[in-house]
Amino acid sequence: MGEYTYLIIGSAAAGISAINKLWQLDPSASVLCISDEIENPYNKCFLADYLSGEKKELQLFTKLFHKNVSFMLGKRVVSIDRENKIVILSDNATVRYGTLFLATGSSPAIPPISGIESEGVFTFHTLRDTNRILDYVKRNDCAHVTIIGAGLSGLEAADALRSHNLEVLVVDRESQVLARQIDFEAGLFIQERMKVQGIVFMPHTSAIEIMNTNQMVSGITLSNGKKIKTDVVICATGLRPNSALARDCGLRLIDDSVWVDQYMQTSDEHIYAAGDLVVVKDQLTGQLVRSCTWPDAMHQGLIAAHAMTDNPKPYPGVMIVTSSAFFGVKFAACGYGAHFHKGDGYTTVSCKGAPDEYCKMFVKDGVPAGFIMIGDTLPQLGALRRSVLLKQPYAPKLYKTIVQ
Image (cartoon, rainbow, N blue to C red):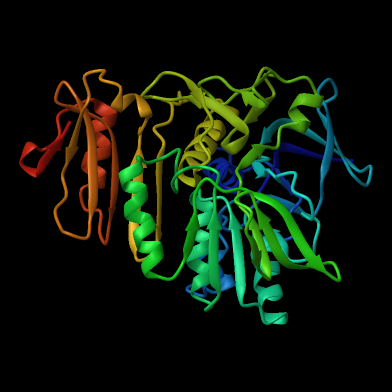
């Protein structure tokens, strides 16, 4: 049985951020990171760039600074014995810890569609997923891909696969792309960019059946009655927290996510958690939310490392900014909600600076409460984010038009 000062489960943003901060705060401590992924730690933010060919695989891997860190890759923890401070692996090996940090992240939610087990159906969440997609497309000389889900991951996959000269169809049961992040008008703006690049989007549409020939994807049946010939299906229908370990060992959960305090400590004083796994306070609403962004997970990992080494710094909460780049434009959105259109004193303000931009703020009492920005460059993003966070007025000279 091995024994370590700090045991990290998970090698994505929160885990690696915690490891690198532990190196600064407790350089002589022993650290073990266990991950069920077989690859060295890498940055998932670059997976779309890798899928498109803009980045090489070696450019994805992150740098580690802790000299005393060991890794168990391709290993799965199956249970936590809190009383004896031991974790048990799938091969029955055990590891003892002084402090445990859970950074188990999330996994794709797989929709219950007939034929979902066919060869040629993929998720787009890990490096292994990405390599499997690339290998399958190349090996089978694929011509058409269908993406189920028009959220951030689905759009990034659509943009990347279009660069391989594949015909791309995106379907979503909502009326627009990015329905949770942006308003309908912004959705139309992005959908027009998709159309220009030859990507077909079908709103109000879900997948009913994935058809196969010799167990390989050959088509898809949609809720609108259409049967589409397709070679590949990508499921991008959301993420669920990997909270089974926490639940089974009796940690406090909220809606299947792990509860943590302002120091990332769970209901067990020797166990901390961060990243997609946890719920944290939203600085704008005060509500507990999941933030599945890489920067937020990294920040939470830093906070956890401080507390784990008895150098506590409170976590202020999260201000979720969703950002990406696809279809030739950059995208960022923060704080958007349907309540902005319900007459609660909010005004919709356009701060568009160029014809090929979409920039909208949702303002109340002269202060922006949320924004949507789409364009070739987003030079105002930092200042606008600070205005929302600090609840301060934002440069009136940039306001162009007002839409009630």
